Image 1 (cartoon, rainbow, N blue to C red):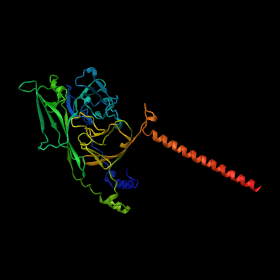
Image 2: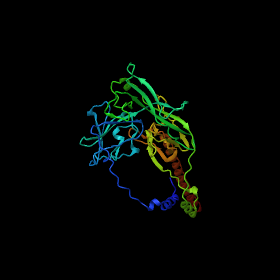
Image 3: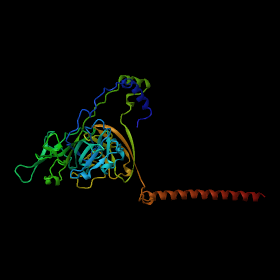
Image 4: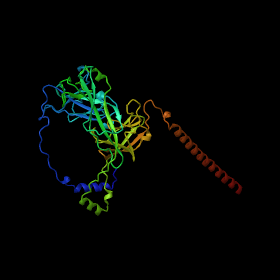
Length: 433
């Protein structure tokens, strides 16, 4: 946390910046909803994401007179009676992300902000149809959401040169010469190195897609013959694809880059600091500090402030880096994951948190240190727990008993000492008499 001596420097820096003394009103812009008309026939835009990320589904169109929206959710194979409403009836449900459970119901992990639906730590169970509408059951815009879980995790970089648009194809069909569909993995470009100045890691995500000429026409895509593997556009007749455990892939490789030199402060600020007797090394570091207190023996999830699903995120505990290659589940995701891991949504997860996990954690965004989190994990005595079940209870009892014995001994010595002094005084007075 910046010291009190750095606040005057920030104050003078703000005074010298021209943005403080000048303000230019923004130009009037046309309403974004007035430029885009809602489709006459409701279609569903396909969107695929990796499990664990926080995603946003914007409501791209709605009537201008509508001041709030309602989001409807239904699973792909569910009936219309199973449709759920995600709203607070005002269209702006706010949610504290620090209180979001790691694995909870969708109703506890969503928020509506400026008509857009935000889902925190999306999971495979969140896949389905999402429709932006009104309380009068008017439907404006729809999504076909596919959340894919990582089935294969690789930490070894490939030896063969790969193109960014590489697609690994796997032919599947029902025994005919011309396959009904083809499954392939579409890889995104490698992320930037998540750290600078020290060894870091790069991540590449590959999502599962299917190519077929028999996809449902109501699901809208950039290519009408390609959709994600978990999309509702995939016909039910492709039972082998529906029952297969095909999912996303995640590749991680090591990297190391040098840190970019930060721009030097302006000459006015340097002159002011020299006049006040400060050196350039005393400039405050622009890294926000966050304080977090959580009870022990519960699942704890730390998220990097400002992180998005397409960003490179890294974590450090003090000066010790936390690498995915050392704190991730097994490559085939079949064994029990470690207690401390980095999930596919770039969250640092403690399963569960212990008191020894207290400390200072740093997160990196796009190769730059972004935040400092000071975590305190305290022992919590809740329901179903007794004082005697605490591991420090015997030590505490011994300490209290020893303190009581020591105070009792001192008290007895004082009493006997006073009685002895009084007895000697009385004996002396009787001798003199």
